[in-house]
Amino acid sequence: MTAGDVDYYALDELLDDEARMTRASVRSFVEREALPLIEGCHAREEFPRALIPRMGEMGLFGANLKGYGCAGLSNVAYGLIMQELEAGDSGLRSMASVQGSLSMYGIWRWGTEEHKQRWLPEMAAGRAIGCFGLTEPDHGSDPGGMETRARRDGNGWVLSGTKRWITNGSVADIAIVWAKDGDTIRGFLVEAGTPGFSTRDIKGKFSLRASITSELILEEVRVPASALMPGAEGLGGPFSCLNQARYGIVWGALGAARTCYLTALRYGQERKQFDRPIAGYQLVQQKLVHMLTEITKGQLLAWRLGRLKDAGTMRPEQVSLAKRNNVGVALDIARLARDILGANGIVNEYPVIRHMLNLETVNTYEGTYDMHTLIVGRDLTGLDAVR
Ligand SMILES: Cc1cc2nc3c(=O)[nH]c(=O)nc-3n(C[C@H](O)[C@H](O)[C@H](O)COP(=O)(O)OP(=O)(O)OC[C@H]3O[C@@H](n4cnc5c(N)ncnc54)[C@H](O)[C@@H]3O)c2cc1C
Image (tube, rainbow, N blue to C red; front, side, top):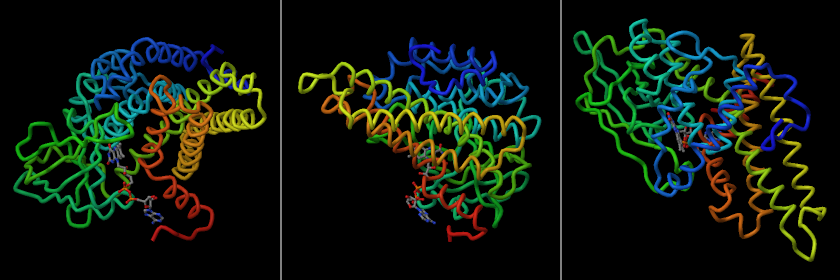
């Protein structure tokens, strides 16, 4: 256990050497190479693109996928990568999640052999970037209502519509676009530069500023028949990808929570008011104990979920429970840490407010906190409260 760890229940003993080594190397990458860039990127609303080749070289993209140049790590080791990236910034983890769990997984699971050979090794190496276009301006929690259309045209397809809130959209070489052919949702690979396909970045975000978020505009975009991912039909296609990314978020949120908790702990031990360190007051200790307790419970949840995923028995509802819980507690912890830092909690001299604002997005994307409540509620009762 290193100084930057929170491991109250000796969870380290449950990890194998591969997981521990992976965690150490990603933590060192984040501390030495990413953190020096993050505040500047946050201020300028840009992703630190110089890190992408390094992330590829380290095998961080699609790290739990097998073959095609991917690292083939266990899901626990993969989760620890997400945890360490998000301990730096949710934007770093979002980049890796969208690249690996949404885009690469989508191709790996639903693409043709040709798609896989063409894209996966390049994406694993960080030489090609992917994005995942599901959400639309008027259809977020209910993607089944999407208005983007796919029309057969001779041998190919014509795509029309608008996707919004798409991470990596304007920097992507390849976009996975979900569109309706009649009533059937299908997935297409649309290459950047295809006539009729353009992107526009969304500026003015207060959250996830060190991440690119774009609109994808498809105006009668003609793609060949080979652009279709033949395996995916219906919402099961995009949902299978979201499930992978949500799994990564379960771990990632704990990274952001850890940074906030450790910052508040150190601050509380040093900051004196009424002649004593504020960490010596009962109310502050109660907050710190609550933070540690929730991180510890979240770690156990994430670890167990990883083992279920490795065994192939993880259910989507179990992912929902853990995404809902771990992001919810991380946001709570970030707000408490912000409070313990007093006025210093609102400036970028400390990472807390950045994490707190980032976690607002994490609570919303990949299924909102409330949507996951309804998914688990339906699982328990057999009654659907979504509609
Ligand atoms: C920074 C960022 C990056 C993103 N990246 C991507 C990406 O790469 N690709 C992509 O496809 N999407 C992406 N998204 C979109 C994200 O997945 C959606 O924002 C999310 O699904 C919620 O949709 P919405 O924003 O339209 O909210 P809405 O669906 O309009 O929800 C608004 C509120 O209503 C509640 N609500 C909705 N329906 C119900 C119901 N039946 N019962 C009770 N409450 C309900 C929600 O819980 C929420 O509180 C991103 C979003 C952000 C902010």
